[in-house]
Length: 473
Image 1: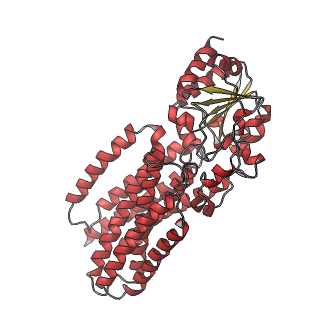
Image 2: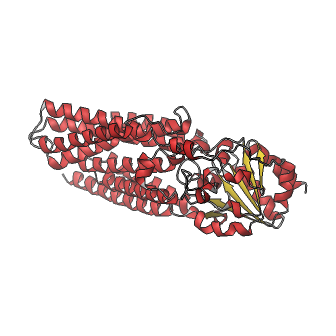
């Protein structure tokens, strides 16, 4: 008895330590210069949580736990070491799917187990079980759909059909209705009808995940990934209530709250509401109908040699990284170019739009990997007023977040979205593979301005050429 009491005390101490590490780690992630330490603290907290759980006296057998640790490590280690930084959005989406799958399976197992107990699960426990299963199941399929759109085997454009919103609403309210019914009727006992209702609710939740993400365009994927992270956290927190695990409650609540707050901030950064992101089909028919045609407009191309002359002698350069930099894995070439400009007496800053890339903080992560100094990174609000004094603005595939139509064209689907004021720079050089539109599906007016020159080609390749030319100046 004493040993069990000591063991239980140790588990709770480990959980308290893990909770503190999670909170401090999350705080560290709010600033680029402390983000690495924040991740290390969070990882240490997870280690404490795992150790504490393994010492729980209620565990009667370790065979399946060991198998799970081995299989999970065998999957997680290659994902962490081998997946390139450019594929990080997809990796995060699939990680959400695995986490949600675990939560859902626990919910299903807990429901089946409690059905056989005297008196059924009870109102409180059934509420937690139903919530974790409902949110977990929709996060499984929603995360997989986001993964597919980011990976490219599912079209990145919004996929819509007539009556879609009505069908989505019917499925959603059907699942919620079954959930409420289960809470009200299964609290006092177990029936076959209850099992059927639970199974149908789970299937409907899986359908919701698909229908939720299908009509959302690729430009909104950062918000979707963040929101799915929030759903997975809330489901995990509910799991903690269902099985009586304090660390799951704390960790899930932190994950759910932080993901939700981040989603709100990112929606605000695009000047759009949650409802518009989730149901507006950004980049769909409205974009096709209202986008200005580029017919009759011309662009001015520039060679790497010409670009090097302009950049090498510039005193004030602002670099705008975008998805083009991520796809080409050009972050190291960008850092080398920035260092050369600074050695020649110029000043270099990086302008980071909140939704540049395909996940929250995508550009920050890539630039940190290339060892770009944190104090060179500036958010939209910090840098926007500086473009008018900029000699050269170098844009690396950032399409929609630099489009002046967001300010000048009321009919544009991105009208009102805060953008980087690249058009205010004295000269603009845009690095792109071609003239394809961004995920919003509209032409970028910036490309056709007299001050803009297009440097066509793979970002890593052409920037390496520019670096070579600058070295020879």
